[in-house]
Length: 394
Ligand SMILES: *Cc1c(COP(=O)(O)O)cnc(C)c1O
Image (cartoon, rainbow, N blue to C red; front, top):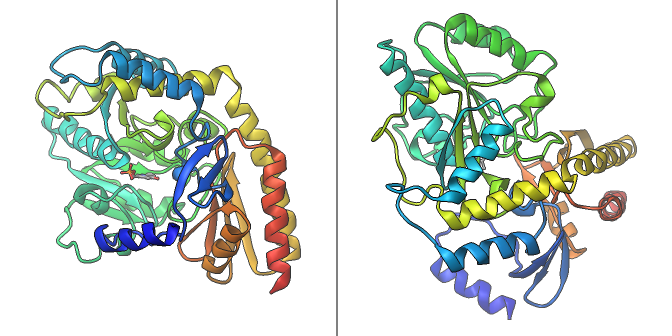
């Protein structure tokens, strides 16, 4: 049966994704099932999206309750869930105002537009944005232009102008790049797609100082690192560095499409009526699900648990690294973990799939582990034991 479904997919779907050969029909907690009834422990979680696991009953209920009342009205009117969600985000972050949209790329689009508009309103001719090599900020024209990976831009030139790139963690290069034409620096506090790359100690603080000295804004793209993924609500809290603008998406509604762009008051000021908009952004059903997601995250101590499980996961993987030379490096924070190999990772992904584990490979040789934050140590141990056995075979 799965073969027929996949054959039909090959006929009608855009060929944009290289998919694993399973059709997933159901999920519960950290487990998903394919159409043949086989179970998998999910170490991908929609790529850092389903932080509370699949089909969470409380979120499903919040969603259904709201769907029974009101799906959608235009942002020409006020709706309560949107205001409640914005209030929660403002109460739990540096930000004063929130703009809602529908994806990570849209959140970064809003951040890019806001930083340019901010200087326009101030009457300053600044429009350049400095970004990092190996960054990932999205697939729309502006966000792929902001992304420091050639493969993402291939075939789409001319890309949007005004972006300068520097190596991540190179503060001298950043100092040279940030000048009186720079309106913003955009960084992932921990690079995700580019290979789970950690900032060196003091790097983000030094970037913050450079931005302050040059009068430029600092944008943190926390689309992947946010909402508890790294063991804090937002990853920048680990480093004691506060941005002026932050983008969120992925885990914010535990699997429903949402993006958010948060900013400090004086910056947010630059978006007046008519400056920016979206039809679906902040719609009641999705924001109701996001409110429930954030309530569970904080009420049930999920982030604290992720810290413990993440430490356990990292130490078990480091033990693997000490015994298997094919593992070059293990790194990460909380439950955002990368394992770099000296060989392509695809065969290992396939072998794990056969054994009932979903894992993801990025940059061809880095396995990324981003399970739901509610995962138990026993499930982590089962994956690590499986990896140990697979690596011992070679
Ligand atoms: C996933 C991701 C994006 C893009 O989000 P979409 O919802 O796919 O548009 C942008 N930045 C980072 C850091 C991401 O991980």
